[in-house]
Image 1 (tube, rainbow, N blue to C red):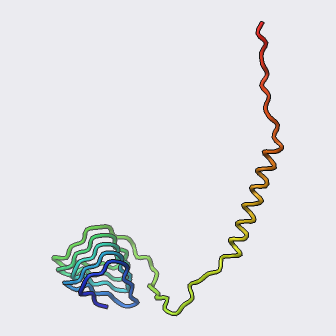
Image 2 (spheres, rainbow, N blue to C red):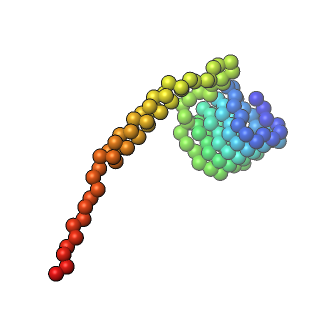
Image 3 (cartoon, rainbow, N blue to C red):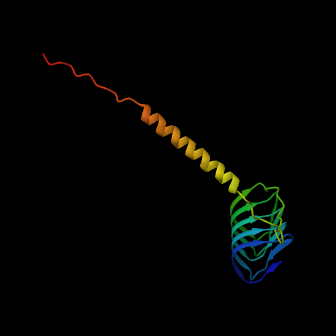
Length: 134
């Protein structure tokens, strides 16, 4: 995928992303390989990241293989790669039914609340003894 214009947001690709000289990205980039010859402000997540001679990256880079050509600029922090491959969820179900778990949490909260009420009801008030003034 080649970016020649401006994008504000998250850009994900299973292959590679090339930010050309006229390309501007503000946000996140996730790809196997990222080549920057334009401007990126945000975070880059990839196995391989190349900043070419006109490229500027400001932000965080997550990768194990980073190269910066003479003239390329990087202002930010590098982090080890996250060793997770970017996987697109096209056509995959992402819904999870957590209703059973939610029901169990509600029952547990009700039981704990009953225990607290029971303990509070069984407490006896503390009596202070008054010293006689003689």
